[in-house]
Image 1 (spheres, rainbow, N blue to C red):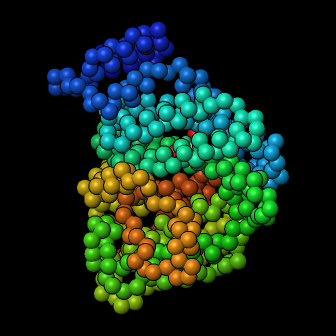
Image 2: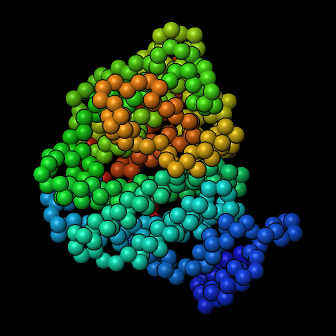
Image 3: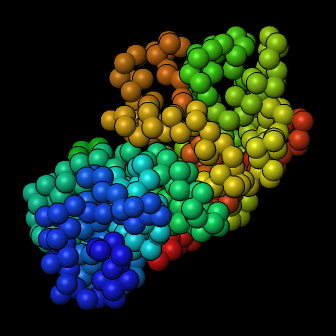
Amino acid sequence: HVLASTPMLLAGRTSNLKTLAKHALSSTLWQRSAEPLVPLPARFISTAVHFYQNRQLEAYASKAATRLTLRQLVFFGRSMNEERLIKSANYVRTELPIRIAHRLRDMQALPYVVVTQEGVAKVYELYWTAFDKFRRYPQITTMEENDAFCEFVANLLAEHKSVIPNLSLGLSLSSPYLLSDRLDAFMRRMLVSRISRRVLAEHHIALTKSVKSRDHPSQEDVGIISTRLQVKDCIERCASYLRRRPTNVDEDTLSGPLNHAPWSEVAIDGHVDTKFAYIQEHLEYIIFELLKNSMRATRVKHPTADVLPPITATVVASDNNVCIRISDQGGGLVSSEIKSPSDLFSFSHVRNATRLANSRLNALRTVSSSSRGMRATMSEQVRDWQANSKENVPADSVDPHPRIGIGLPMSNIYATYFGGSLELVSLDGYGTDVYVRLPKLGTNLEEIEL
Ligand code: COI
């Protein structure tokens, strides 16, 4: 009955809410199906109840998000003092529940069958809990309160590490029930919004650290933004890390061997001295994923070569943009499963049949349930190496990276978040060129949708 009454409750008849929720919990929740009614698994009960607690959610979801530009984040963070830091804390405290509320509303608008897919209810719960905690969080007025707030936010950031693999698993499993355009538009809103929330949260935590360690103010970093990020260094760091992975393990199946030749070298040309203001973690995420794909494709395409063809990364800076082209000889992208390169961004099995492949679903299940969540960022991994080894990192200390099919769609979303783009060009039978364009001036607003 509760589930059948959704439209009535969403229409605001909240006086019935408590009674209905009480009935739901005191007896058994039932889901509708063509078969005789079956009990709803216990793990969905609290999710179902939240579906009817909409009054608070409505209040927040009706407010517009205050979108920012990269330049605003730098300007505000540059002349930080305690007063501005408290302002920043309260901005994060009040802005994040608005952004989360929009996404909770978005999830509620999906057919209920989606919310019952593996992974989706978990994400809904995480967001509901975070929303509720943020909206109840008291105003921050002192540095001590800000410290406690940073700890609170850092804990949420850690708890949410498994969101993307869970969402990807649930939406892949839902793709038989949703039109591919609707599914992909939903995923895009979820992922862009998540990036935006993590940027605000991490930027504030980084600003707090820099205000507290006044002895060593960095001229070049403002919060999480590197104001003079050297593109060539990022490419080299990613290539060096990726080339240290074992060569004898197929990352699709985590069993081997493929071919024992060393990974392709990465040659960098073009405007190699290019520097611009950007979030290092975002740029490195994109480059890391693109190089990883190129390296694997090259290895698979040349199974007996002793030396694999190199990959070329060309960097070009124009007045408004920084462009990076990554070219490989890995045979191109179009296959029996992928008809057009842009289908690789899709989470729908209609456009990308690999979404429902068992190996992919199992890899997603493994990553979703791991406490580390998705792979740590490049910067975190490089910091780990440096902590563990002063000089060279032995090859066997770098784990293989299970292929969960998220790298390309996420890279696309990272590139477009501040108004850039990512395009794939397949030279079928020969190789792939990927073009990444990132705006250089930082004047574009975050591309989040309401
Ligand atoms: C997320 O990572 O999905 C978030 O929303 C993080 C935020 C709660 C700090």
